[in-house]
Image (cartoon, rainbow, N blue to C red; front, side):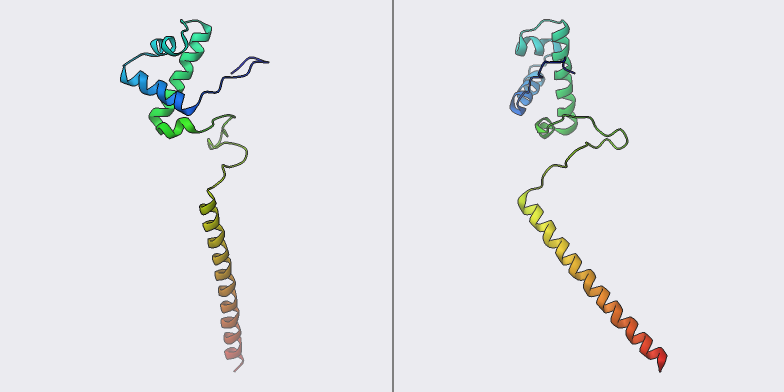
Length: 129
């Protein structure tokens, strides 16, 4: 967590992946990786960088390189682990496909309602006879 009035540094996905890949290729520990990329010895700032590298490695191992490309700001919901706020936008093609499927399903529901009404009407007429 950053201190008041200080902005957190934002690292690109390419940089994160490069750091993790280099660390794994050359069998570097967190301390050596921090020293190589930030030139910082172990101190308060070095500890925070080490924690950042540990987090990146955990994300990389759990989700792969794509996981490091996601934006992870904000708190997750405590109940389900889902994020608050707006869901990410879908691709245009996927969105169009979903809209078309939604319209088709609505038409199908209307058709079934009309069919059910006709069947009910026929049953009522048969009961009267």
